[in-house]
Length: 184
Image (cartoon, helix red, strand yellow):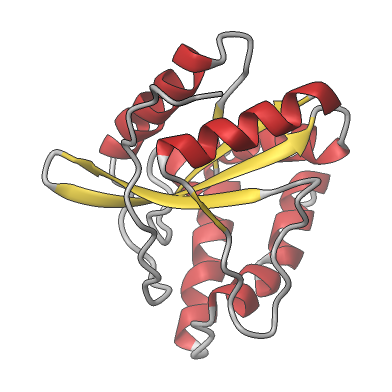
């Protein structure tokens, strides 16, 4: 279906969890990948989410993208991501990968001499997760206190020695819920 697609995505390289300063070039990386996807599937929405989508937010440096899909878009999107070079998720030990009905793909992209790891979350468009991802990103962008609390929690977890990416993600859950509820 996508035989003529230029494979722009390289291998995903698992790295230790750290709290890096925000890299504004992440937005350019997200834009490049989004444009490549929309070039082949023009009706698809691709959104930059996660820490790298929030100016000033420290994090692992992984560029997260979200593609909300209808049931008929799921297989073409997965095929295109494969053709671009994305790989199926390899979940950290002790954690299950996302199911193929809501897949996450991994890869990397070289940009201005730096390799950026990528996660592409393909989420059913009618799932509440789509709005949750948007709302969390937007709350961090709009409220410096939310951003400060989120980064403080990340630093705290790392100081406690929680560096396994699955455990780290789970341990951030309570502060994320508080920010989503607006209680911070």
